[in-house]
Length: 139
Image 1 (cartoon, rainbow, N blue to C red):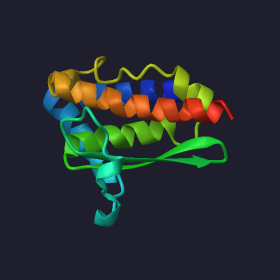
Image 2: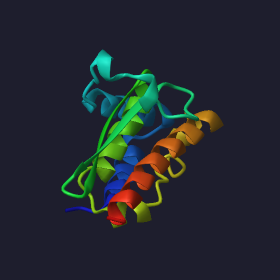
Image 3: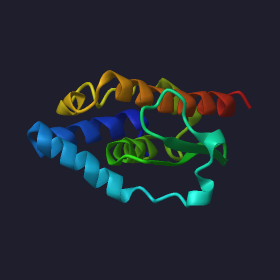
């Protein structure tokens, strides 16, 4: 299985190959279209990620001692970042999830589309996923 870090490296290459900032944002929207929509009844206040400018509903599941992400957002750009995080982290060894430095936004022109609140929101999502991975690793 490809590691989260190598998946991130591939994603950075794909984003850069998309070209200018507008096309890179289109790449993110394409990723958003791949994320399965969460049924409305699952979008409960108790699963909202705090510190996100957008609404982000996040469920983390333990499947064979590996994290699996089920999530949705009310904005397309965040749906795209969730899809990228799913690609990086679903089914990975907890140790690899914990060790991954998620920095694809800062390394690409997507940084122009993310204000400080959106960056903090994505960091909050990553922290929740990595904290969940820590709980799996501690088993």
